[in-house]
Image 1 (tube, rainbow, N blue to C red):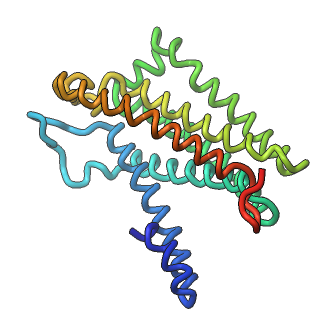
Image 2: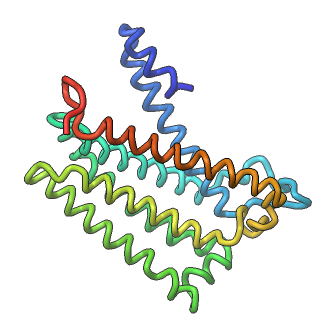
Image 3: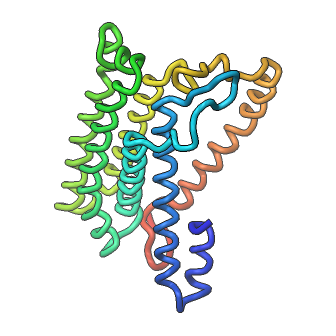
Amino acid sequence: MLRGVSFEFRWRDPRHERFWDFAFAGGSLVAALAQGIALGALLQGIPVEGRAYAGGWWDWLSPFSLLTGVSVAAGYALLGACWLVTKTEGDLRDRALALARPLALVTVGAIVAVSAATPFLQYAYFERWLQAPGIFYVAPVPVLVAVLTVLLWRALGRARKWGGHDTAPFVLALGLFALTFVGLGISMWPYIIPDSVTIWQAATERRSQVFMLVGIGIMLPIILAYTGYAYWVFRGKVRGGGYHS
């Protein structure tokens, strides 16, 4: 709610512009932390009995869920900084670039910390990531994270030293996020709720799946086309007169 109204009230209520700036930043931070904490709570397991939640009020709150909350917030901040480097110029670009390098370090450190803690949440995670033969299948993921980290650091350095090369940091940051999703999928498979509900147990009946598949088959190309068109229209840098390639 704070994020949604702050854009409108910020210029409608110039006397309290600073307040609405803080409201937008605070709302963004709370949303990011909440998403990360929910992810951590899911990874650490949710007790289910008879298709109903069987845990307590505060099971979601743990050191691990707080770690994932901070990690997601740091990752979003990195994406935001790299996006501003891509889309802006001048002082704003330079400020975003100055923030991107420490945020990259924090994000990669958070990825390492969450990755190190996850195998010890459940034996299934440990077996998949640290024991043969699973370790041979998942080994490319941390290797690719290391490669993308080096490339991201170098891309930020090039952008800072020579100017230009502004798109590469954002693309590489997206790559890091994609790899974390791959790692998440590897850890959770085949569960929707780890160690409680599998994909097949959570699936609806076949007729409903066919109905949704038809709807997705129609809507997904439209969404992709619209998204691609939006990126094309708003391509390039944002300047005083609008967008420029």
